Image 1 (cartoon, rainbow, N blue to C red):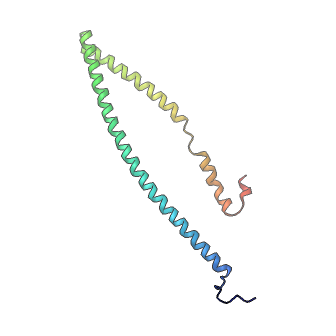
Image 2: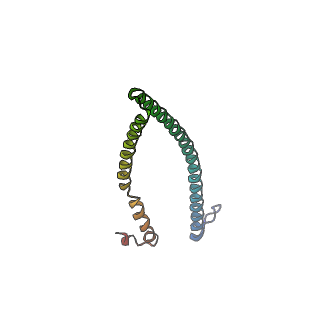
Image 3: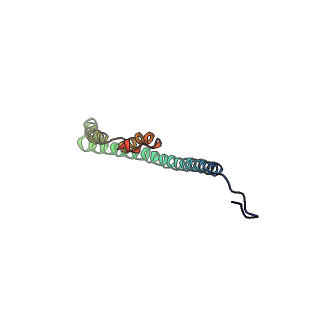
Length: 136
């Protein structure tokens, strides 16, 4: 079969496959670079937000400290004993710490890791080899 005059030459299957492979490689490379750029931008925003939360935590700590001192002083004034009022304020904070520790322990037991991701990652080698039926 002859090609019409002026028609572009036809490419072989190997050449077409080579182009597709190059294009796919370029696309994957560009997607990875985009993901890196987005991750850097997200990390910067998260760091900025984390810094703000840290500042808020320090300020909140000072609020609790001065409120505790005010309570200690007021109880001491009412009881005519700064020593016993300090013990009462310390006992209140001990109760708060115990409750928070118990809740934290209960919450940490509920952490299950990433079971679905771990299961999916285990299936990748079979999928790449074309043996998806082994993943069932």
